[in-house]
Length: 187
Image 1 (spheres, rainbow, N blue to C red):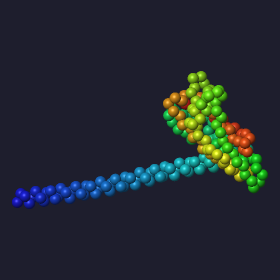
Image 2 (image 1 turned 90 degrees about the vertical axis):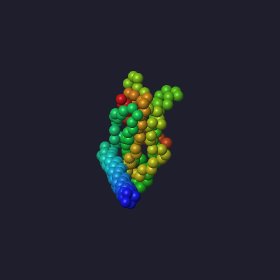
Image 3 (image 1 turned 60 degrees about the vertical axis):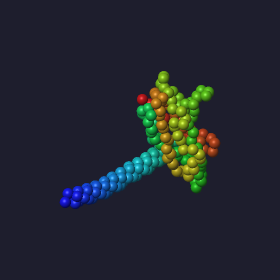
Image 4 (image 1 turned 60 degrees about the horizontal axis):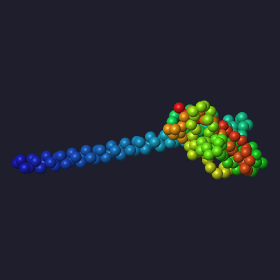
């Protein structure tokens, strides 16, 4: 009798373990599905924000008549952080129905052998190197009378500090078209 009771209780224990395991796997699946939906909504909202920034910048540059506009001119950052700003280019060179090819470059700091991309504004400032400020490379085609918006990625490290000035030089056909300047203050 005791032997039969022991087998029944061990069978009952195995069934309980299987039920608990199935419930745990189900909950894990639901949790992962929830997290996937949350992150996809966040990236969708980020895309919407970028689309809204692009729309606002195009409207702003066309209303102002300027050739190059940045969405931020003074950027406050912490050490070892990242920021994205946007530069809008208004095409005013090509004839109707044509287009122009633009390139962007970051002006290097003055001084031979300097790897810094910005000019020190305050004493004791340490500016970011050129590989910490990323522009879209290559030629960018913009149709006559249109404007386009491009991202500029900024990444600070633990060595950066103080305020530095950076210049984006926009060229069309090898000639300078316009400049856009911004300041980064790393605290």
